[in-house]
Image (cartoon, rainbow, N blue to C red; front, side, top):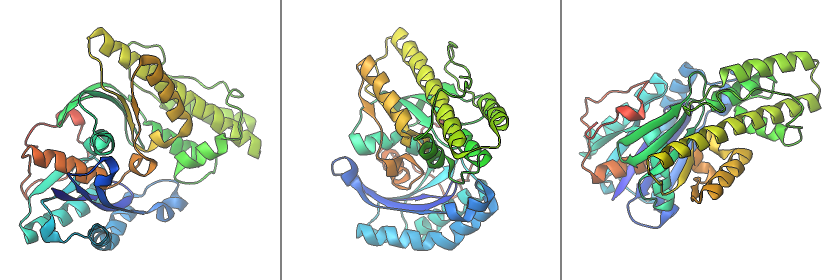
Length: 347
């Protein structure tokens, strides 16, 4: 089987072709990602209108490049998958409408993919992982801990009650004048900083329900920055290091609570999986490795190019659904909000 995947939920215009055969990442025949970071740099974050227009301008060429690199014609595909949500509505409309047009013109089935399911199933694309496994999904818009029992079968253990971890990284970078995207900028600055200089809070740590909260941490960081101003380069590095350490501690604690819950239920996951752009952070990955080792679990973190938004994960999620006969009609619409727990067979 071969599927084309299209991803336009935020500020990456992406298309990919994946195959059902092969070993791990060898299944990815092409994975083209065109970043819009430069277009949003001056605004310190993604501007939805700019993102949507950029998708319109770039998507046809990105799809053509993905098909060419994969050595695949439209007629060779078994289905066409596109992100239908959650995400920015303008971008979702561009990608899903394009997928509908290609499906109609080629007579191929259409699969509307949940962006979060794309992240959730990436470990099966790269590592042939069996269900069930525990997923930490941390990105610009999401911070969740999910039990993955199967395709369209997800149990949410914890989520953020306010801001996502990735958003907190972006806002920190903007506050300190580091630029966009915030995650890599903060991590780079933190590499020369003192993580114990600023006593930042660890929201939700120790609570029995493994939810996240990062709004209070952002406020505490702003107050620390104001107190330390004017900010020298070392001040910025120390603030970033302290912030990164606080986020890492929060994630580690919430995961430990989640694993305790599963142990009490008699459930042993096949692995601990981390996905989403924040999973590219080296300090967080190291802490996750320690947690997994301490629990006797395998840690699966996709390659860096598959942690952030990409179309290979959308194509793969489409392929998994295709195998189960889960297709969508041309009347399917985009959804700005679409929780994993609302997925049902046939949707």
